[in-house]
Image (cartoon, rainbow, N blue to C red):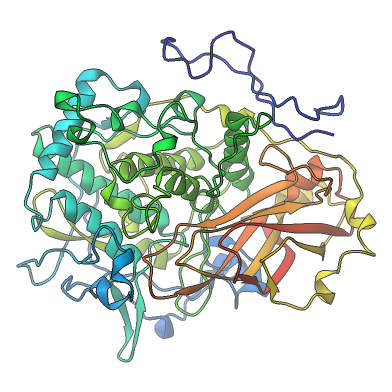
Length: 597
């Protein structure tokens, strides 16, 4: 029996994170504990917005799959819906609810609660027109930046921090953007008597919103130092050479004082400065076990979140809809959230800065972290064999947000204009992607664990839902088909679906999802095929007890192949609580066949 993931790279005598090496060495990462021989440019124009009750034209694919492509028709009333609406930030940004009206305990808030942007003299934001770029800005890995580039980056951040707080380009205002869009400060008018919060997390608009956010942030920094070629670095946490917090964020400034470094933020976890390796499965607990190979866990985790979502749309999550549950994508729920919590300071009331939505934008690390999240979108779109190109609904394309551009003008931008990053004038410097060749491997093959559990574990149809997540949950879930041919697998993928995940969004919330796992006292990690994914959420601003109902899906076709369990009628599904699950519940667990378009 084993619990490991092996990267197929030759061994090397160099430490994988050695600062003395000028070139990234090849790797073989292996956990030796409990191993056995069994291991193997167009102008954007404001569209005519259509309210949900007016939209009667439904794309056939959306009708079949649900917007975002996550679920079949049987699930349309739960997560995802063919009647999504274009998310639309309000024209009048002064129509912003101060966060003070949302919370009760100001003493717990460190960074301030006034998230609304400065007033604009413009009556309405104008449609943003992407300029023509003579050359592409190149975003480079943070750990490979030259000293000269680091100084330029520091100068740009210092110039932004020197602006008056009420300037739309100031550091404070850039941080407020995330606070406002992510904590219910903006509302969208759906009808005369109905408003809904504008939300940019837990759905398929997560990627485009943050791409636009970084775009203007980058353009503003470039203008402040009079360098239109300036590009934001990215934190290359998906590569072993970049898995430490980039040194420039913790380097002393003038007079050898850490506080004078404009990239420094005192609200970080001091124990996670280099040489600590980022934990892409972080759940607020420090590992520190000699058998834990963090690099392997990270690579296997990314393989699952990226490679095993090629035939499904769970990379993006479902499209937003005011009448149904929310559901984020694999990277948002996985690596994205883990890094937020890993960097945030556990000694602060709300894990400020990066560990809470309201304060995350005040740490410079937020932007280089999200640059790599944006890069994951770009890489996923180009993966070999990827038959999905992301959301294609008109509502998704017409979803829009309001920002101040680099010229201090209030503008409206649309999802449809940010899908091609080269049109936006930037690209990413190439970096090796070892997680492509780092698949998880089974702990136990052909375990027949589901069949053996029939007498001790309830079937889903016999389970009284909702089930609480205050302890480990085991459920036997019937599969829609067994022994499918390769041709059938090419037409439909098998999905494990969790509906009605209800949790308190004030808390960091996380649980792991396992299938056919043998409970032998050994913790199953992302290095194992039995580990199919994670559900995790960065907390919102504290004080208003906001319960969220969400959902998630996980492709298990390849997992069942790995585990040699394709002929089994049932799958043993295990939910393992990790953080904030005391008052959380799940209302449905099922397996569906999702048609592949």
